[in-house]
Image (tube, rainbow, N blue to C red; front, side):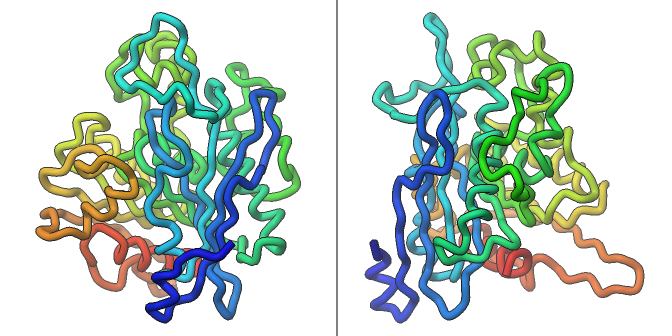
Length: 336
């Protein structure tokens, strides 16, 4: 079906929308994604969006206006579902999911297995849906920012294999011959290191891991994107509110430091007096909150590295305010 009627009136490309496309069949149920593909002269690059919701709630509908940005940026988007962490009887987490949410459940590493499976499936089916999956960006917010960052720092889910997660627990069942690696990361207010979070038995982090962090240190390490950062990690754009009381800004700061210490190009926007979801009610309105006047005050840290004898290409030509301009510019530098 075709969307973006407003975009057509503005002379932008129309966007073909495919909702509820199944990318994996799990024992818990079908895993699906929504596609937004701008109809341009050349195949557009792809950005995979991973929604937030504390790993226990929300759906792939909880996303910025991907129809709009597909048209404005000439980028294809895939908003993916992943298995949500189950809430045991008697648990009292800080977030309460909708009991009618149809998304299947599973304990980590099911979530990252799904995100990586979606990336491989998208590469395998790029020709069918009309986008270029050579270079792929991944973008997520909050718990989705965590999973997007883990997808970026893990080249392959097999990297999780060991005593904690045996081979069968991380088996690639979807398009196993395709690469699940990504070439760029955008993360909003993400969890980057479970080992630097308060240990509460009923926290959503504990529900994700299947037990308290203190009792499962190796699970916590394996689930932490920061633990997997290497010189081969992709260029990264981070945005985080300094007043975030759900995910402290130190999570993004330490990850930024870990990337720059390893020679990875990274940019961190710190937003003054903004909390989680940039003080908005959803990821769709979060983007609007960044563009509405007055814009939040912000500090920007950026690092760029180049090999000897080459010229460094900065990730951002200028320093636009946090929001769509910065993300579009970053994607143009990394996946176009």
